[in-house]
Length: 529
Image 1: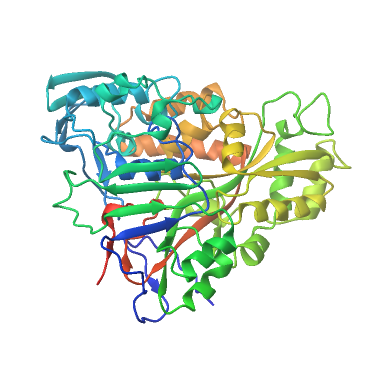
Image 2: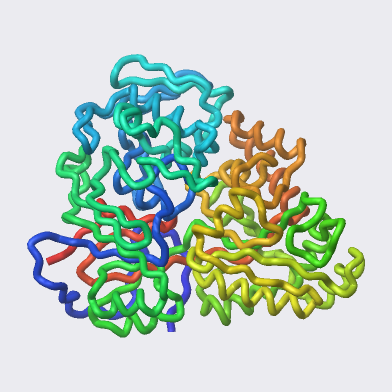
């Protein structure tokens, strides 16, 4: 039986006894064969703010600022930076860098990329929404001017990838893909970054092949020995595990929890784990005058906080942890987790208790003594046991008189419901790459946030969220962050379930540090002899 531990170690730890190395077929080059349950939804680096998409982007594109496996900020395409005054940052760019097509990287590409990320069709706007001006000092020096002091600008820039302005113009992709409307552009299936790997071929949902970029600026510093990456998504859990056990793949970053002990039974494999920076929760549309899929007509039950409290009391998170997550989750009382700035352990520890009778009483007080029906939208290939969690919730809510129709579907169909804000009740997971609450506020809490399918927000909260973007005094900023969370906790637009753990299963001769953001970077990987 695996013992659950929560930690943020750089490389996690190996579970199981050491044994003979995995016997891979003899080959002239080191090919890392990777699989996951789902594929990236697009290759456009500014179109979609979703982990799997960012994960493939980061192999081929670079940002000005990077993180090491311990989440510490390090130089990327910017070799240094300086805060010249409260509203002005200066970045010195790395010289001699070329894009995959041979074009030189310079300040013009930085200006283009930031403005592209700010475009209306970009889902990356929240990272760069304080930048009002970009100044080109020379080919390798740029200055960003913000509308107010931004204490987390460097953290936000980690996921803003630099594109080649000339290439984008040549192929008509000056603006990001409109992902919400399923727009097809050249950048959806083609890339031209400065990153460690080049795109060799792309078959969405079938296979993506990346090859080593021999001209990458980081090859001397990051001495990986991966020549090629073959990423083959496998949606079926049993098939994905079978591929690992048979030696057909080297790395699985989302092995089914129920199969971990079976994987560890192989002398050729190892499993590494760490606490993930991701929380799983339900969300409610708290604004619609009438729900889209409900027996209640003419009003919206979720507008009443008592109904949201009733749902909270009806969900047995300990049962979900025990029966579905096999003990591999940590019940949550808020939708962020440590080490995110703004997290408070007491909210995790004092989540509303499982109490079906209290839930029934709250429904009756809200005017629904017989309950009502509603649809639950849920992904079935994005989070650990996502559909099973939703199925459990359906059964739990039935016990308080709420009839739930489960609409489980692949993330490519599910996410447009969230970004299009056309769902009544939904399951979502959220990570915080900036490691600061402001990111969660900008995407989930502000009334105009792009992923705020709850339609939650007030002018007062919006003003506070906008204010912390420009407050550099740590104590003052954290005080307002706590005020915002206090209001969100009381209003329950989101019902927290648990913080995820992550497990990577791999060949014993593969070394790659497991990262709490669940984003493997293949230039950190190496095969041992």
